[in-house]
Image (tube, rainbow, N blue to C red; front, side):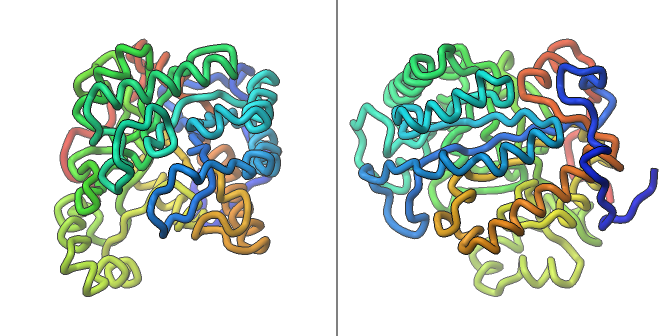
Length: 357
């Protein structure tokens, strides 16, 4: 069915929830929602071990109600302050026990014991830690979640997307089955983080631990030059390009923009263009994400006022209505995607290289 990018459908158009008659298949667009579920802190300030407030967890109900309307079972990847705070854990465990959410792990090193490293921007990326310390921190987080939720998590997302050279082996050793840390076509190297510019948005085995499935954040290019995006965007977004504001100029001119499947910084129209483009490239699994503090005005740059929150949720609903309605997609979960991946029934996707125009 051909629809314009502004077309939406009602909640009644949403497919049956996972486990119903419309089960996920590898030949239909599949949507996972993975939420970075974490403490509140000032994103512009230095990292602080004392910033452990998790009052935002009590305000996830509006998003959770939206997910329920569309048959979406989100995965809350939670960090240590959330897992170790009884009220916050109880709220999320209620969602889990009702079958309306899954729980995974999200490692923020500066607020996760053991505290054996100096707090710094470099150490805020868990993959930059010595292997033994990264493993020790994730082991503490894993056991804290297991105690609070009754099971060990199998889905992991590194805080600040900080996948490192030792992370795959650590994940495999601790029993994780899915990683969701990769941000395709994106580099955090200028901030001492990982460089994912050579990584695409297709599900695959995690390098260094092929039994662990990589579920990347859905990121891709739009615009007249999208076919050359992987080569051009690093130049536009380099130090000189940023100083000249080239990424913004290229996006506003319709030449090239990089879009993340997140309501933080993009709207439903952007997301619809992105999933259409990625779908043409052979992508069949889409990962949608945001940070849990965005559910409370004032905690993130994306939601400063109650009106911002209304818009934020409205854009989420508009996208879900499109994806699960006119686009013919199905809501699923990372473990369900892994089952399809292991069975070899997911579409193979595009070959490595630049996406097609």
